[in-house]
Image (tube, rainbow, N blue to C red; front, top):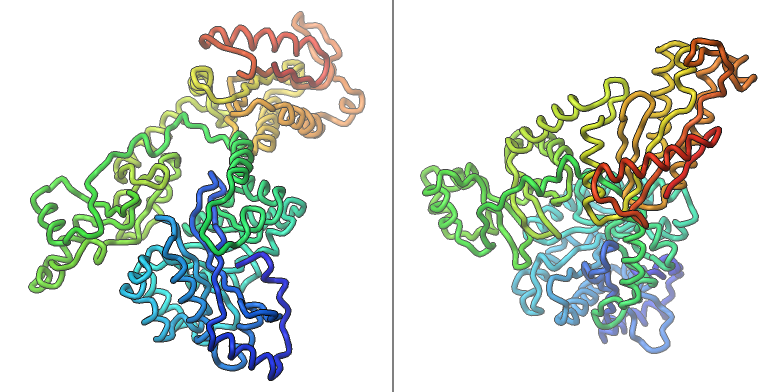
Length: 593
């Protein structure tokens, strides 16, 4: 809802105000405004929330006040109906593909008047379709009958209406609603959004809520965004959609957001993306997906059945809408089941694809890792365990991938990784590291390649033994894991040599943090006397005892910000020069060029 909604104060309703309320209803003094809900990925408009306003001259009653009076006078349905009718009527010019979010009270949604007021014929009058409508459940009062409410929600879902839960994040009640409804969208409560850039507790909360949304395949919308700092933080947290005064205020017309606002979103998205690196060496699911048979929502089901019956290699058919988005799927087994038995053909032959399609299917973006998709596929219920996975690109149909292909590829990945992984640390070894570096120097994206090795490690290993030497190596890995929080690639060349690869140039913070953590962590690896002395006694290369400083770490880095690399040898020569300079400096040191 609109940004000022929490500013409404409940009023003590007087007879005069009730009289004014009746006049507003009688004369239909309500008008709609529309606030865009946009993608925080590219600024494109997902849809518009329809908000109602009181148009009566000199009235002090807000729309929230009107609903308060409606509850007290038993006229919630009349006010809901008026708001909805005006919202739909003025949505005739809605941009194609944009959703219309309608606020509804949960106790009204299962009213028979409400149901008849949103029939297909009613929507056609305003050139709208059920898939255009999102019911935004707004709890103005507690749900009177939870079972009836859940049944009604399912009724609307089956008709292609979508559901959104408003004010999510207020507490257990919000989680309870999600579990009961399983909505398509949840709207993050604006009290959480307010000053989120300054509040680490709110940031942690949203991070966890985003994780929950991904697990249950629900999209989050942050409402009430009023500053660029809040927007920036929400983009960093990877909240997919947002709305609020900073993006655009509600307007009587459905307008796009400004060019300046889109540029701000893109600016922060690009800046954030470079810190969200996903190594692509093992491949994304889009690389192994294949385009298969598709159909439209209006295709007769008997035509699909006959096509599958005459083509034994067809195992599934995806149903696409006008935007080439997947809205459902048929498996071979499902089609045969629909048309089997004595009455199967007669019952279903006159239906169209949209009537019987399965809406519960696994769909992933092409950039999802193969391993992740494999895990998601195997978590499905037993009846859908072997169904193909739908793959999309920019939300449009790309193809499908079978469970067989997923498992074969995942097994190949695991075998390759096991062969190449360092046995002590489990990190990828030389073969993987070289391929990763080649991928970087042959590409065009920003990168930093960081080479790390320990100083005085041999002396420590000789004095304290191999077991303690292994502990120091594992300590380096632990520090790397604490520093690499944005999916940087980590590799173990061997011995005390390591590599970190980032898809950004500004790696100085990471290197500084690495040195800080390592300096603290190694204290426990030394005896108290040696640590206080700041040196150990060990044998030098000639076999004579000598005093050696504590182990330190040298970090040499190269980026493609100012460097060009013709091949792997060229890179190796240049990184060796930087490494040599680092080793000449005593103590912990890093240099990135």
